[in-house]
Length: 163
Image (tube, rainbow, N blue to C red):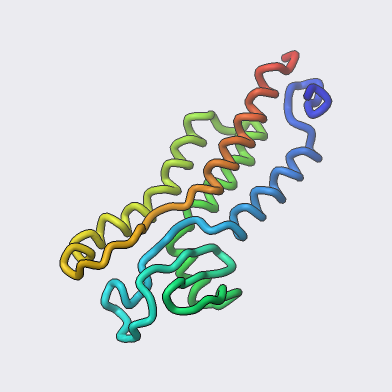
């Protein structure tokens, strides 16, 4: 592990580069939450679905289609609205690995990634109760788990560095 560090205790720039690419891929490809579809919250009149599994690049609506919707601008905008905090978390994982922020700051950003999906659940509990339609709405914390694991590994390297 020490070969990943420079003499000043910082991670090698090549390792940081790999972490940046990996966090980018994890952030845009993996789903980050299960959100209500517009019909479920009463905005759309099309009875297509009640939930959507959302990523920045794709969406999957189980009751509407057996297909994944790729690179569709309205769903990508919905994804940005629902998961913009995930971008900040990915950036903070990189900043933590560069030794620019503390573990506590990273952890708070990580907890914020859970807030918007859980907020959508909290706002829709009355609708679910009144309609009798219950569905899981909330985060899929793949990025959170992977990001914290990467940061923890980088932190272990910090602890074992000579400086």
